[in-house]
Image 1 (cartoon, rainbow, N blue to C red):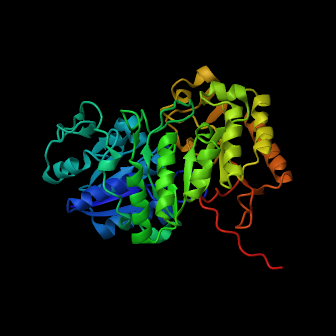
Image 2: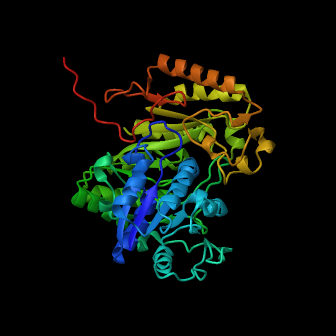
Image 3: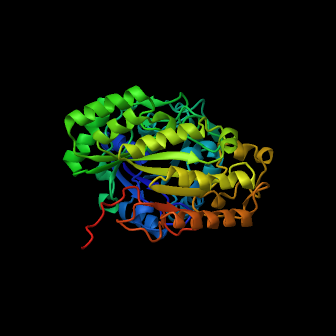
Length: 460
């Protein structure tokens, strides 16, 4: 069968950096190995015009279109699914992803014939066969679908989680690779922590904790990307790169021994990084570590269940910088706390002096306690189903905080901008390859690139 996987753009029009979507890449690779013809349409790379998907469907003529749905792209996915059902009523629509797993009935109402709850690798082949042959898929676990009688059926449990080392390497030929600046891959799935603001993979998609790949298998894929696709830069999309210090050390030793000549980025908690880890990562080709700092207030960090102190953050960020790695940091304004506590982040940013600072407004995403019990934390969500408001990068009126007014938030961002500019940071809207210290806020038009280009030579 012809199967098209669609990844709708985020509802927020702010320009973001591009990562090719690994989730649908795994599914597409599995189906391709079974003899199906597969295309992937990533609207984040192809362009904002929603007609592009309809044009792709008209040209490819798929029998099945599978939508990858997260909360920030759900408003777009909903409109696209409804448009497809009107234009091509015979096409089977399926949906998966974090948002679809939490709101399967909504996706069915939007036109999906079936919604996969949890990971899709273990069920995608059988689901496609059932749709192809018109068979009842009620024997497939973790599925919500509309029976031919019109009845809504929800099968028991969630789909079986996958052992990452049992999955094939994602076939990157499924992507429109010229649209991306670098390659991406996974060394692990899930996160063992329970930060109040984070709707992470574990507990939402993966129902049995975390999965970690064997480090040699990870390096084999890096080498494959280098040799088959000329990869020189790789972004690891793990919530926490390889999760455990011993695994990171083993990976770095093997990676250094193989002399891959590939640069890469890892996302890590600061309490996972010490001088030995940072040095080993640098020797293994790491270019940058992305730390989620969130706040400079000890009280806010504790309330948000971050599980780290400012001293631990200091040590981790300093270890990375002292080892020659580029440190990118993420911050959240609007976590429950007083205005004075919010302002503590500015001082902490200046103290840490990371190379990159990315500031977001708190979004009480579905799946978090802030969404489920907002009043308990002084958060007001005018309409919990108005998901147009649930996008990073903007300041939306549907989400309000009792402890921080909209004007106070804007002023906080403006004061942060002034302080960072005075300290030598450059806004992402004006940054170029020679900018060493960069910041972005919801007031910026553009996000930062994942890979900072090498500085250009400056004429004498």
